[in-house]
Image (cartoon, rainbow, N blue to C red; front, side, top):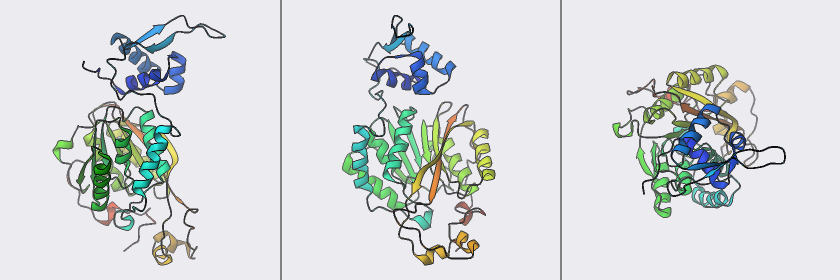
Length: 347
């Protein structure tokens, strides 16, 4: 029997009800969703014969209608109770993921990349699941030094995962893990300055990217991701670092998001941490912000002084995506650094 097509809010409601029946008010609390979209989704789910209402549930203080699953046969298999970050599911994923990424470090200085903590990678994927952004969706990832594609694939709720990445070492690692774990992940070596291959345009539901901190990089990476989204309701996850992205620059990024037909729905401060690596004192003294100090601060302690953070922004399409950049961009160092980039060495 053909499974019913569902939008994001319908998936989230069914996932919640799969765990246990709920009142309307309990759904509002769990979903943090709009009244209108929730009401419309519940109406649609009733019309699709997927939920039913028990209007006789009694509580200690009042009588309240209980909403529950009616027809499991037509509900897609990816609709499951939302797994929490500390659940057995994610604890198992963390163990497997940590084993795979141990000792793997992408080209930090060449492409301004660095892996986040495994626990934070888990938190990201769990948040995507909580928001209904991976269940039954096609996922596009632009730059994947954190190997988030591996975690999403291992969770087993998405349809298709495509990774475009410039670093051959990252692609090789993803392919290696995918082969070992029998994961369906498509990879392509790609330079973001080039136009996207046409086969990826308007083909995806969710994106993830963590661009370099320059204004140009944010605009370009977001443009490429926006170009892959199917339309209204699609969502994306973007890394933004306050260390090198001032409020003024963040305002420009937000303007790009709005003008492209997206809205900023979530801002999670210091969501990810970039672990300090065995950087030599000589490398630190070449960083522009150290030169401004006028003194040598010494080296941060590995495993303790993890001083570089990134916020996580979630964006959602409210209209047909309108990316500001679609063609080729001629850029060199300015793609990775601008006047606020005080970590990337000047040479």
